[in-house]
Image (cartoon, rainbow, N blue to C red):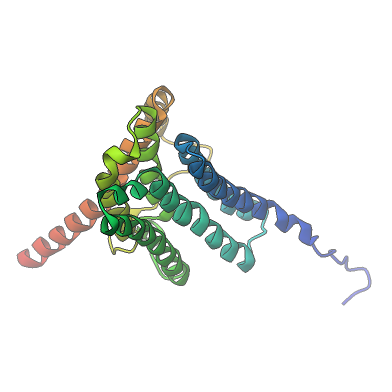
Length: 256
């Protein structure tokens, strides 16, 4: 090597702090949701989970923009997701509603905390499966409901009910079914569109601008109900899209 060849100094490792700060912020928001729900402020707890989802969506983008991806960041993000979208929603649902099932007897009380555990365990299994399949699956789709979307369905329900004065005890059986059903959808084989193929450049079709306006206007009018409707439709899209695809392929084989 020539003496005149410039040697690039090694990149300072402190830059890796930036994406991990977003990950830490997401985990803090999830932890805050747990603490707030214990204090009885369930709307703030639900909002905190949505803040965690926003920060979780930013840490990966920041890592790619700054070229600071690392295996540590991937594993740390998964642990943060488990807290924010697994444990936090499960405990919020339990403190808000599922804990009141004990009023129907000790067996129902055990069913209440078991439902919360099923949700948390399914979130952990979903994250573990995603980490092992990240290099082999079609990035356009998720296999099973993603944990942030699952948390969004449950927390928008809690936020909506709390905003309109519906206490958790009045809908404890609905919350029970929701916790178990959403948890099982996370570990299902239903395909969910990942939105990773959407146009993110400077130029996008005018239709995307119109869709953005139609979503944002009602969102600012009534955030909890709009979020609940949007994420419930997304939750239903997986089974519908998967079953429709299977039926279409079956018809094609029958016509061949």
